Image (tube, rainbow, N blue to C red; front, side, top):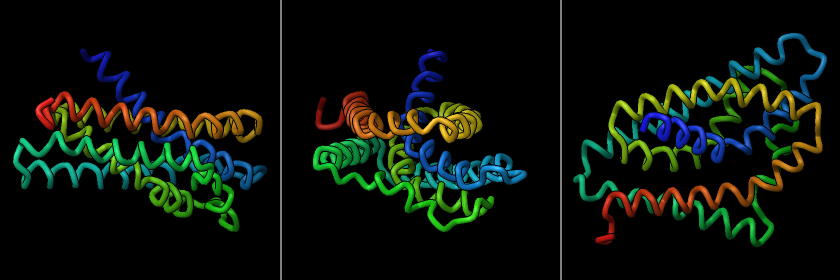
Length: 200
C-alpha cells in the first residue's frame, strides 16, 4: 500500500514536471561557466515548487471544508479536462510547451527568476494536485508533498544532465506531449470512478 502510494506520487510528479526539465536545462545552458549556477537554480526551483504545493494544499483545504463530500470526486473532471486539452493541442501541433526558449530568453539565472518561471509554469500542476489531494487522507497529502520535494532535487540534477546532452532534451520534449495527456486523462478517470462520481 505504501509502496503503491510512493510510486503513484513519483509518477504524478514525473508526468507534471517533464516540461520543467527542459526549462531548467535551458537555464543551466544560459548559466554555463558561472559560479553558483546550480545552487541558484536549485533554490529557485524549490521556492517556485513550494509555491505550487502551497497553492494546491490551500485550494484542497478550502474545497474540503466548504464542499459536500459527494462533490469531491467531481474534481476528477479537472485533470480529465486538462488531459483532453493537452491531447488536443498535441494533435494540432500547437502545444504551448514548444516555446520553452521564450520562457527563459533574456532572463538572468537568478533564484527569483527561476522561482518565477517555475511558478508561472505550474498552473497545470495545481489543477492536477488538488483533485489528488482531495481524494486521499491528510497524512497521504503530507507524504505526497515530502516525496515531491525530494524529487525536486532529482529534477534539477536531471536538468543539469540534459543541459549537456541536447539530443536527450529533444526526446523528452517529443514524448512529453504524449505522456502528459495520457496520465492526466487516466488520473481524472481514476478519481471519478473511485469516488463514485456519476454513479460509477
